Structures are given as C-alpha cells and as structure tokens.
Image 1 (cartoon, helix red, strand yellow):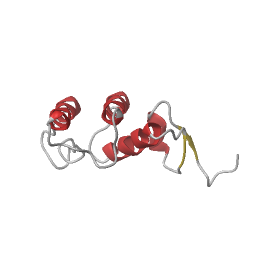
Image 2: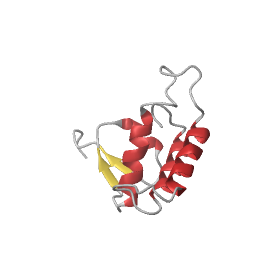
Image 3: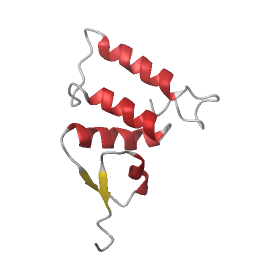
Length: 98
C-alpha cells in the first residue's frame, strides 16, 4: 500500500481508497492468513489511513498506530509528531520533560 500510493514512485499514484479496497479483497480470499494482525485490525488501519489522509511512507505510521490500538496500547512513546494525526492513540515524546 505504501508503494502504490507513493507519489514519487507512481505518477499518478493509486488513490488510497483503491489500494485499501484491493487489500480488503485479498484479505477476504480463503487462502489469506495475516501473520500478526488479528480480526478487526484491517478495519482500524483503513479508518486511520483514511482519517489521517496518509499515503506513501506515512502508511507505515498508520500501520504502527493501528497495531498499537489493536493490541490495546493507548499511548505510544515517540519523538515523531506525525502520529498525532491518528485519533485514539495518545503520544508522548520521551525526550521532552513532562
């Protein structure tokens, strides 16, 4: 998803909703078994990616946020301010005093 939506790799890149729909079709295939992402993960990723309007490399941030929320993590310690675009996941910069 990060590759096909990346504007410096494809001109034009695939729109995020199209890429997400392709992945949804693959996940519905009987032979598809995600390794770590359990039931409900992809819906959360889809929601975060669309809500955060991410594409290209920022897809990785959406995946991390979705995995955190999927596994019950409500606070991510990071110096990366880009995670602020994902509602429901509180962030804390461990390099800055509280």
